[in-house]
Image (cartoon, rainbow, N blue to C red; front, top):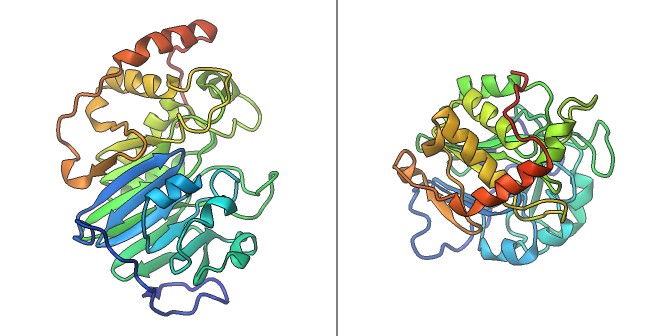
Length: 307
């Protein structure tokens, strides 16, 4: 297991104690499972990578993993409580500046990365890539940094953007040129209702979370084969309907002619990369009334996002 740029004193090159595989795993077939919020399990090249685990029950449900990838230090992405449910033999990969938050948890290896770093996890390459979101943990600051990840193996690639705000999204153009992405996991909401994030898009700080429309803009920039919406329907303040992000993303995707490329997963549902591109009918009829009701609270007409 090698790293092209070791980036922390404790990042010596050595072997991981690989996790025990469950039935049907370790075959090299690519898949991604949404566990809720931003948490996802990526399976590529016979390796299992857990991203931003949140909630001990959901974390345990992911089973044994080879590595944990943390996109940024906000408490709903870097959750010490949730990380305690992960076997400590897993390698923990965090953005630069976040290691002091987790070094006492007892993981076999903690590696800090920043955009441009690449790690070889026994044949699965993990690329730390740029994203756009607030740095810091409890307040805005220069550190810890934020990062997205692209995992590649056997000619397949899965992207997880972490959180994204309404700032400059040109970095995603470059990612689309650099990688042929089979799937991208993009946030479509947050704890607050969709209308709140849409209202904040014109604020000075451009808001801290994008809405479904903007997520589709980024998906088109990336040129990925499919988009898996995340960061919705899990951690939700009771100020609106938790289903609105799902309803909105499917509605706008249909209007843009890309509905077949947007795969809304249920908690714990997996998408095999071999199935990407197959025709899937996604029934959002049950959310239509929810969408109309929330639209009555705030206008939900399409808006032009900066590109």
